Image 1 (cartoon, rainbow, N blue to C red):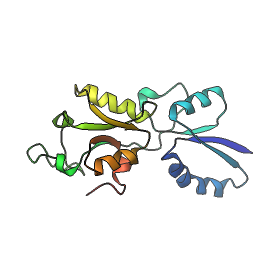
Image 2 (image 1 turned 60 degrees about the vertical axis):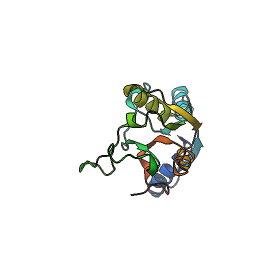
Image 3 (image 1 turned 45 degrees about the horizontal axis):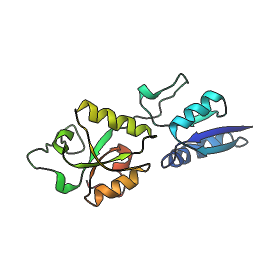
Image 4 (image 1 turned 60 degrees about the horizontal axis):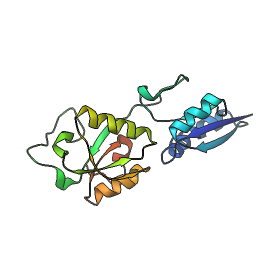
Length: 172
């Protein structure tokens, strides 16, 4: 038989690649048709019955009436150029792996945000709203690596998924 599986662009292929070898070993005769599209499109396709499985990242508020299986959780972190950190605003919490700074301390700094259609954008807007902030948007992108490139170039701040902090952009 076959399964129609959908994942989201940018990270979905990596997630699928980490799962597929074990699946193939256990079910060698099943063909997987992998499709990449946005999470919102995935939800519509699953609801329409044109997909068997979707690999997606979203919050509880974004879930539809479909069945979901939690694979993992991930934090959203504030990425800033090192020069933006102020010694008197940065603290080091022994329970955190990263220095801690309030996003409100960066109220006047430019931010790069995910594109409107991304599920992370929903979370970014929620965080800004909770902190009573209207971000000054430098640019928007559908790729978190592009956003981190701009942070690395010292142009802006960003809210990114924890996975990307472990990329080539991050400093320990």
